[in-house]
Length: 490
Image (tube, rainbow, N blue to C red):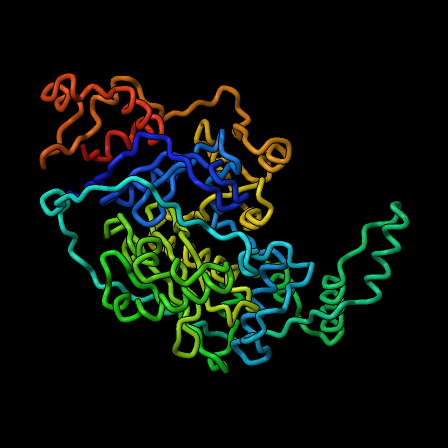
C-alpha cells in the first residue's frame, strides 16, 4: 500500500520574500515529505500548499507581504489570446525557417504582447523555497510498497499537417471606418478588418459560383492550440520534439540527459535571473527540480505515462533548449518550473511552454477524464510581474478561507482594493474540510517503525505525547481528509 510519510514543522517559518525582496516578510508552514501519494498531494494543493523539491509549504497569505493565491486554468475551456496565438505563430515560423530567433536576446516584445510570460525577460521567477529545519532519515522499505514500473512512452510530439497562410496585414479602410465610429457613437459598430476581409473573400467566391457554406462554418470556428501545433508541414527546416521523462524514480531517459538538462538550467539562471554559478550546482538543481516525494502510480483509468513527477524536454535539432518540470496528478497537470536556453529567449519559450502544457493536459484528459486542469502555482496580484498567469483564460483562484474556486475575473476587482481577501462572495460558505477536535485522534503516526493512530500513540506515551494544540493547527492547515491520510513521522 502506498503511503505519504511527512515530518511537520510546527514553528511558523519566516523567510525572505523573492518578489518584493523583503528580508523577513514572508511567513509559512511547512513539512518535509519523505514520500507522498499523488492523491494526497492533489488534496494539499487544493488547500493552498505547494512543493519545492521535497519541501511542501503553505504561505500564511493573510499576513505576508505578497499574498499568493493558488491558480488553475480550466484547460478544456482554454482560449488563447491574440498575444498567445502570436507566440505559437512565431514559433511555427521559426521551425519552418521564416524567422531567425537564436542570438537575439536583446530584442524586446512589442507593447501589444501584454500577456507574455514576463519571466521570459528576466522577471517573475518561481521561487525555490527552502526550510531551515533538518529532516530525519527514515527506512521506508517496509512502509511504502514498491510500484511495478510500467514502460513510459515518451510524449514525442512531432506536429504534422498542412499549414495555412494567415493574412496579418492591416485593412486601412476598416481602420478609417473604426475611427469614424468612435467619433459618432450613433453609428452602427464597425466590424474588424479581419472580419471584413473574410466577408469580401467569401463574396468573391460566391460570385464565382462556389458553395461557401462549409467555408463559413470553418471560418467561424476559433483556432485552438492544437490547430496551431498541427498546421505545420511534415517537413520543416528545424525539428522539434517534446519528450516526457520520469524523474522520480529516475528513468533511464532522465539519467542519460541529466547533465545536458543541468547545463541548460545553469545558463537560464545565470543569464535570465542573474544567479551566481555557485547557486546552480548539480546538487542544488536536483534538490529543487529533480527530487520529488511523489510516488509513481499507474491505474487503468489514468494516463499511459502514469502519475508522478516528470520533465518535459524540448528538443530542437537534437539538443535540449527548454525543460518544463511538471507533476501529473489525478485532476491536473501542475507546473513546478520552466527554464530554457537564453539563446532562444526571443521565441518567448516561457509562454510557449505554458501553452504546450495546457495542450498536454487536454491530451491526458482523453484517457483520464478527471484530469482537466492546469495548475500554475501561485498568482500574486500585488506583484505586477506575476500577474501574467491571470491571462490564461479561463482561470480560477482558490479562496484562502473556504477553499472554493472563484473565477479570477471576479477576484481582480477585490484584489485591486486589498492584497489579501476572502475571495468567496458567499458569506454563508464555509470550509467543508475543516477538522473537528475528534479528528486529530485519527492522525496516523509513524513511531518506531509502526503506523498507529494518535489516539493509540497518546495512550502509549502518556503526557509526552500531549501535543493536541500542534496537531489541531496542522489538521486545520491540511484539512480533515489529509490529516487522516498523511502519516506523521514522530
